[in-house]
Image (cartoon, rainbow, N blue to C red; front, side, top):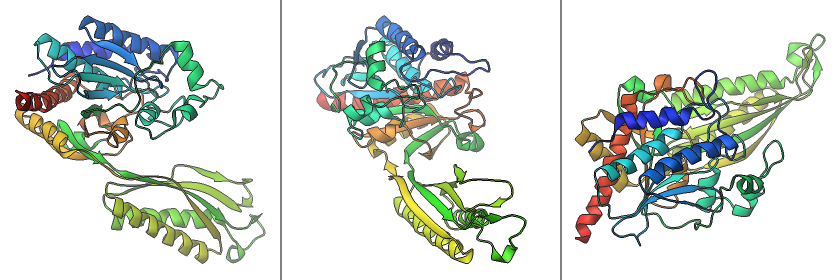
Length: 412
């Protein structure tokens, strides 16, 4: 079975009109009027095919198609409609509207599904207005405390609770209720599928992430009067550390990633040797043991170069998210569907955070990736083709059917 490609694309383009930016992107921050307009448009489409509409206490939106066993825990598809400031038209939105298209196609073909099937729109996935990211799914799964998140404020001092009240996006649907399975379709947000010329990424999990906060301390001194051999230069020492750390990952952890995203120089001046630098290290690897090995070797390199340059170094672990492994049964429904549809594919690990990473702690979960142009995301120029959109939605539809109909056959 295949979805209606033109209808899916029209839905994507209609949604993109809400919060459209000058360069073809979108701005719909969580719980703003534009975000709510996007949700209202989705609900309008849902009403056309008889889906029920409910919200939970953190503002997650659920659209439901009843099943033969309507008492059973639902099979759920989902993603998000909120965007980055001047973000793209497809990040998150594609997963929601591909899920809607699956439900529309089931309605078109009068398919009797065994499980109830739901489409979830998770609140504040991007974390662009309220931090942290993936807020709605984290509260749903019990990773974050509801009350603490409701009290979280944006830069203007507006709380999640006050904005839920203002926009009427809060309901009484139970948090943490059981799901039978969770599927999420998404653009890859990276260049791998495009470079490998594959149409679908069969996502096997999400890589582990470990953040370190580093402080390199030397001694402030005059740039013109302090001989090189007498300096305790925190900048030079930090630079050596960064070069050595990058080399370590290249040579010893070919599947790993390291990023130095923030750096702050205390009392910086053009003609002063920096005394103290605060900076960050982002380590990622799909294997937990190798991620910990990266951390250990990072510590060794930092201590070595601190000593070599007569500096002190302080290292604090800021955050650690272990690798996520998706459900083998659900992965197989995706892989078999791809093969039956005759699409080129490869196994892939998610490099970005997604609501599916949270849901994997709650129920059997998997994801489906489609390529995006140049691997570009979180950018107004983010782009996919009509054909790519169809391929991912076709796989999602057939994977859902495969999972659901297997259970229907068992129950018959």
